[in-house]
Amino acid sequence: MNEGAGRALGAGFLVVLLLVWEAAARMSGAKAALFPAPSMVVATLWTMVAEGHIFRPLAVSMLRLGLGYLTALVFAVGLGVTMGYSRAVHNLFEPLVEIMRPIPKVALVSPLIFFLGIGDLMKIAVVALGVFFPILINTIQGVRSLEPELVETARTFGIGTLAILRKIVLPAAAPQVFAGMHISLGMGFILVIIAEMISADSGLGFAIVNAQRSFRVKEMYAWVVVLAITGYAMNGLFMMLRSRLLHWNRDYEALEQSAAQV
Image 1 (tube, rainbow, N blue to C red):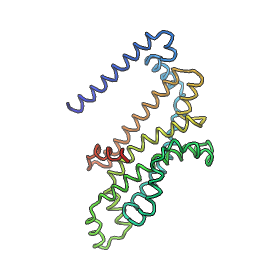
Image 2 (spheres, one colour):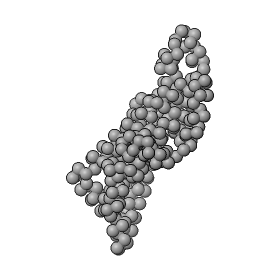
Image 3 (cartoon, rainbow, N blue to C red):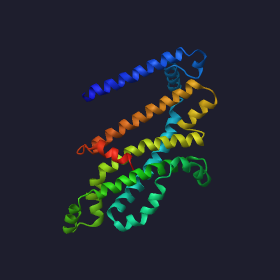
Image 4 (cartoon, rainbow, N blue to C red):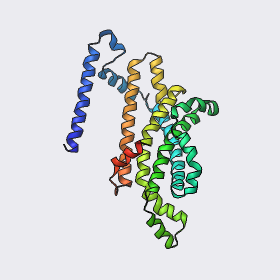
């Protein structure tokens, strides 16, 4: 089956599920108030878009995600390249990384509230911690997969360490780094929504919880649809960017399977 036929099959399956949901909701009687049909959810979403209700919560969540993601990216790539290149640095930081990495980052929300409060800084920190480790581990693996002969040849020609890292090591590790970035993007999005659900007065996560507490069921489902569309759009934009920057590398699936295991 070619790619186009596979996508069509997937889209058709989604349509069937929506039709089944529509029929089940309309036959549920009084339960329809808690289990609205997709057509009702779409109508509510359209009203929210027309009235401009979704743009501010969406912008707030994306800002928090972007700040946390970019902060983690800078530090993770910098430390990962250094740990992958230098055995001494790797031995220094490895125990701390291995202790912190398995901790579910959602569990850090409560301690971070004590230190950072309930404002934006806490949510940005949760995202940064969740995004940091997958990018770090994949950067280290990418650097270590580099052929040693390339570095030795560069040293033979008198190229300095910083130039080697910038011109040889980092480009060679880029496919693995992007694989970690792709996995971390979804993790960061999940974490910012959870953090907003736990403690926030704005953002997509807060909008869902607020609608649920107010028994605005159709609006609650509409916000979930906004999450789905946003996540799908982010993934598509990331893949487009990666295809442009790494057009010379096509081992995406193998790298991402490895990234998902860290």
